[in-house]
Amino acid sequence: MSDRIGYLGPAGTFTEQAALLYAPDAVMTPYPTITAVGSAVSENVVDVGVVPIENSLEGSVTFTLDLLIAQSGLSIRNEVVIPITHYLVSAPGVEARSVEVIYSHPQALAQCRNYLGSRFPEVPREASLSTAAAVADMQNSRVPAAAICPQRATEIYDVQILDQGIEDNTANQTRFVVLAHADHAPTGHDRTSICFSFTVDRPGNLYNTIGEFASRNINLVKIESRPTKQELGRYIFLIDCEGHRHQPEVAAALEGLRRRTDMLKILGSYPFWEPRAE
Amino acid sequence: MSDRIGYLGPAGTFTEQAALLYAPDAVMTPYPTITAVGSAVSENVVDVGVVPIENSLEGSVTFTLDLLIAQSGLSIRNEVVIPITHYLVSAPGVEARSVEVIYSHPQALAQCRNYLGSRFPEVPREASLSTAAAVADMQNSRVPAAAICPQRATEIYDVQILDQGIEDNTANQTRFVVLAHADHAPTGHDRTSICFSFTVDRPGNLYNTIGEFASRNINLVKIESRPTKQELGRYIFLIDCEGHRHQPEVAAALEGLRRRTDMLKILGSYPFWEPRAE
Image (tube, rainbow over all chains, first blue to last red; front, side):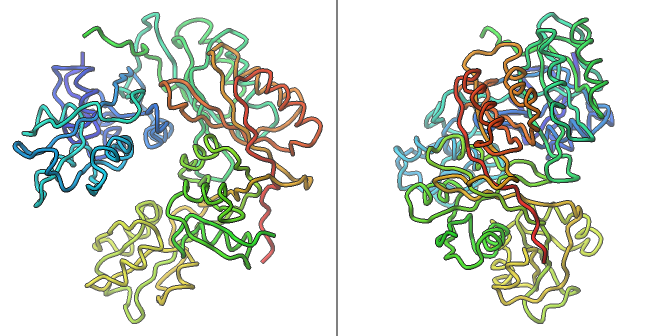
């Protein structure tokens, strides 16, 4: 198990919560951006880095996709999936009925829109830079305030929990990836992430490419496209498939892809996340 | 040609610039969100709505994709592509060397990072809600200020142009869609946008589906996935293909898709954008 973990900070966010679930005893260092986490791994300042890659409501975190595409020497070693459960907190002694402003990251405010609309219809919302920063904004408020934050923030800050599970859609989950210099050894329950592109646009390009998986009965979990940043309408495709790159049929499909594409990068094979018994 | 256009405001943004290029003589109404533009079209408050859907550097505008997936009665009638050229402006009489703060939307600031770093290394940047709001922030500044904004903002506000074309990557383009109740009649130079999903995840699902296009030699321009918002790992796929849905081979491919998918929505067929001679 790794000793030093870098994660997208600050402390008290869902990413810290995911990093702690991955390695409860590691030394944790927050970084201000996803790019900074990637650099810390590349430069061996930390052993692994934890960043969000996908949320079940919002979709992909494009900064993380672009980092994986662009930065060499970074592999996905693991994934971690956590439910996004929002807490409503206040300074100790501040009751819900006296709250005059509610702080959180705009995405968290949006995800609790129905709850806030029915319980706090008249209370203005203010944007914070992160769900953890919302707690600091609440603490510094000159009027009685509340914040929407993750469970982790309720553990490390001196707050009173007014309510929990206040998100409108309970199917809210975020998937994080653990970045390292090398990916994971086969476990028998693995996924593989790759990206590729074509120089020339031809009918059937993508069809023939994903045929390498279909003809071997390998299930595709996800397909995504990102701009090449050179020309509108040219894309880099990202695919997650089932299986490990060391399994013969996956290795053969990847070999087929290498012949059919102009750029192929294997982002890593890693065990897929299975929720732990609590 | 339509008379009343709703667009993602405020006035002076790239979206207004795209709307004016589409219909210079229309009555223009800005709306505060992409959802509000969609509703204005649905409720016949405007004839068509103009919203951004994709940028060559940032990728898809997910709010627009989710609106097209979720809202019934909205079709894509046209697309408009414009180059994203950033202007640096100040209040009349304020020279570049006296500027003490630079305002813009965070994305515009990021897209001019190299320029700002070499020309204004010591000048702090401040975030504004839009590139048009940056001009207002600049005008209200208590110290000499500059703003990064679109050409359109330089036409409607009383500003002095300090520099132009200050974006780091000149391949910066944004594609907008024109939303209406019905799509466009065939022109011979068309594209068709669709979205679809599968209830059960099977190897080859996506392969067999896009085979309906490949077997008819229809080129796929774009493929994208969005979360279903019900469960992590389940997606709605969005595809742009060449051709109009009234062309026999495209119609046959869509008929094949209807049999292979559990949900298929045709978002519209429309002429692809060809830059006008200036």
